[in-house]
Image (cartoon, rainbow, N blue to C red; front, side):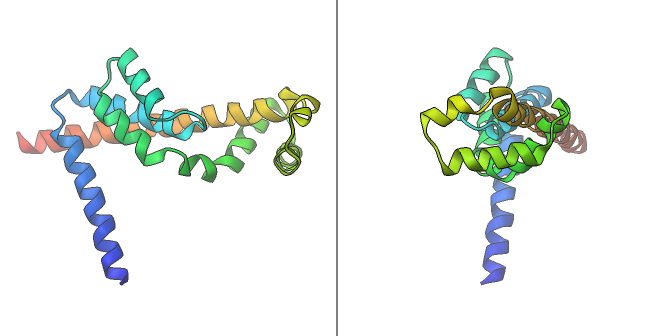
Length: 158
């Protein structure tokens, strides 16, 4: 059973690898598209449409943007929630545990009235800022890793 899972995971990444290298575009545009897709996929509330929009505006490869977004969309946003709170709070110089506690209160006792009671700067801004920083860093990392990998593979083929 465990061996089957390993084969499926390996097969998934092999297929992903092949799809990225079969794209007929420059390595820079492919890597930029993937980086933009990862960026858009990590931000909550954005998704494939945002990734395609960014790729269109910046003339990056739209197929790789879609792949990057689908790899990170939604599930990674939940994983990075606490990290986003910590990063945004650190940038703004506030205690991340207070922000986390306010978010828990907000989610537990959700109502439109609570939205107005909570300070936007105290609760929402640190999380948004944290997500932007994390999304930018992971998008940049995806861009660099993809660009280096594509350039090495294409150099080996030549």
